[in-house]
Length: 194
Image (cartoon, rainbow, N blue to C red; front, side, top):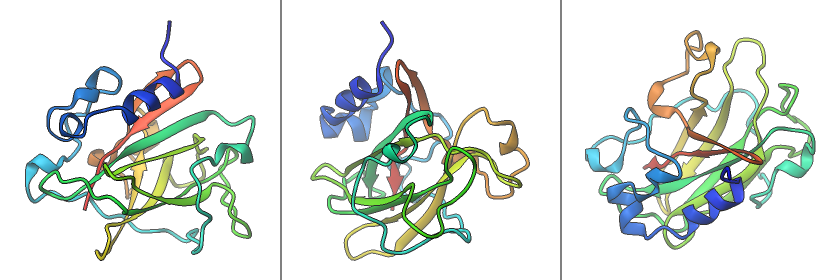
């Protein structure tokens, strides 16, 4: 029986923190990509990318963005926020925004925009849809990540196997989501190191 997004999220949320940070115990549900930077590398922080022209401040607090597109292809995007010594950063702000199922951004309201704070183990997750392509860019999510009292990381996360990755000037392979297909959509994981 194939895994579901809910079962992968449940597995993610029940991980012992030390295993998630140091041994990749989550590998059975969502193996790490070898090019993804990790906090074990010492000085390697998550790469920055531009916010782009579609950022809007004051997004609503919330994890579930998919009700805005009931016909969209569902995805749960999840991960941890760590410092460069693999310490989880509880209370970190995570903000997401992305294009809709037609490749458009909501520049009036807050469709496919939201924020949350990491839990006590540094975990975050959003339930949303896979954004559509739009001219000149590969498929991606925008994120802002800020540890308590720290500077803001602005970056973008990308989908593996997208033909447009090669031609996108902002794409970088260390910003690839670790994707798992599930019975009800996709599950993508990425750990931010700030």
